[in-house]
Amino acid sequence: MTFSMQCLNKDCRKFTTPLLDEETDQVVCGDCFKEIPNITIHVKNQLRGSRQIKKKTKAAKAFAIQCKWCQSNDVPEAKNNKLYCTNCQKDMECPQAFVNLFNMKKAKAL
Image (cartoon, rainbow, N blue to C red; front, side, top):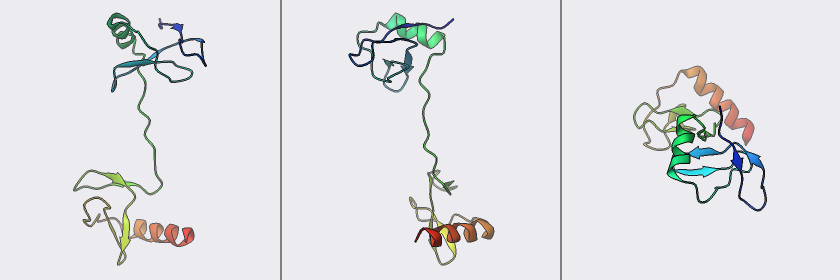
């Protein structure tokens, strides 16, 4: 069973399902995603127990790949028909088909 409460923000004031932001340990409204002030530790523990936790959103980029050297997940940089990590500048060792596709995408963008 989910825990419900009224949002205390002036703009919202809806009866909603609150979510716990585990990074900041704050309770946010499920509708307006603004912080709900003055929430006790007992309510936060109840939200943790009922798994009402704010999910982390991960912005996906087109053609982003993970570097096997530094583990960063970003769009590589093309030089001399090879792809290099934008973070550590090492060769990404991608298949030639992906390199060709990446170069075609880059040429269309220009």
